[in-house]
Image (cartoon, rainbow, N blue to C red):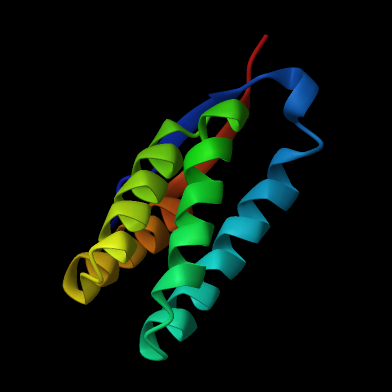
Length: 101
């Protein structure tokens, strides 16, 4: 069994978080498709967007993964991008959102 990751979010963001996480799950599929097509520019933009948004919603690992994806795209490093995409998918599959006080 995979360990769950509790993430405490600001109650003011509770209505927005499900949509944010669903968008990141769609990003996983987009990233895989773009990587298959060798479209590093689009991968970089997705990574940059994740880097900017993750921490604002309380998901610092998404910020870190987004930064790593952006760096890998700039270097056209497919192997690192594959690892980052897998890491993002794993993280998203294990999150338990908890609304803070």
